[in-house]
Length: 148
Image (cartoon, rainbow, N blue to C red; front, side, top):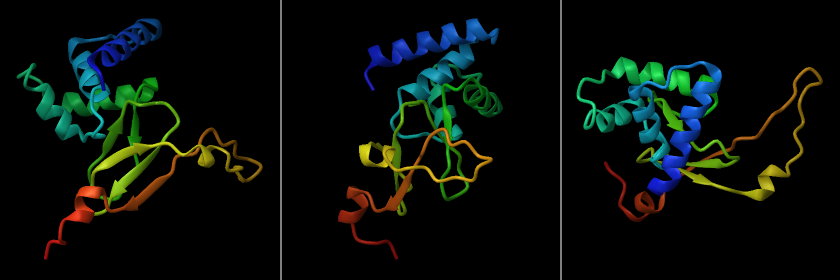
């Protein structure tokens, strides 16, 4: 993402924190900036490695707690994946994910036809949005021979 777009997202985050009475600490801002600037759908550990470059005293526990806060504020989401690692996304627009079953990369994709699928749910459930994960091989993994 462009640094200008990421900067605007960070400013909206700071404003939202102010409106909700949540402290916009330097650590939270830096973690959100790293997440908002990433298209890799990073794990907490990936964010930790990146943020520690500018904040060497940052702890992994702070990254995990901050990600919980970002999800609770509605500025990030946890992506359900297969595997043990949690992955996060700051893109809160309606979109879907392509998940590589070999390298575990995740990329965004949009499919307007998916947004038009009628949601059939029990009477006591009100759907809010649809999020689809398509599992397969990314272009890079498809072109390389399988590991044995």
